[in-house]
Image 1 (cartoon, helix red, strand yellow):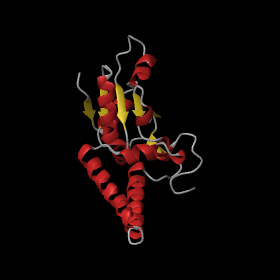
Image 2: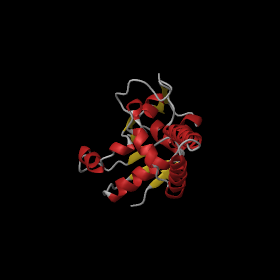
Image 3: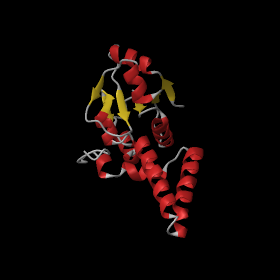
Image 4: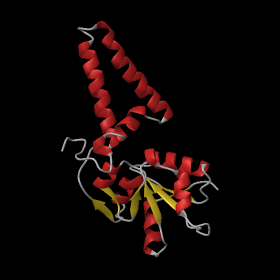
Length: 184
């Protein structure tokens, strides 16, 4: 069965009708703490275990699993993994948490943090800048900005970001992290 994609408004209609909704948010714990749909639970993409999620459900349970992220990309990846593992009913919420907040769904606001996407851009920009400056003094350092450019191009072509996966594991992006990407 293919993944069904619904709008935030359709999700709200289903919630208001009393339909039991099992909504997982696959963003990092820090992003989830900042803002999330009120009835979502956090299952970060890098920790997503489809077999474990299937085991948590009873054999007779037919209700779908709803998946959401910030804007849709990570949720689509999570749906692919869940579908490959045999999940029978998957629904991806189009536009993610941002679209849900804009549509007026109940969201919980918490501690402000920098999104994983912005962290990647900041880190890549910093490494390119440092590499460019240091290459004037150390000739082989030009390889750093070249490697960053190659990595960014690869990330754009494949929609897979190694730097994002590494940053997601940093303490400020973990559930027990003591601070945020701003340093606070």
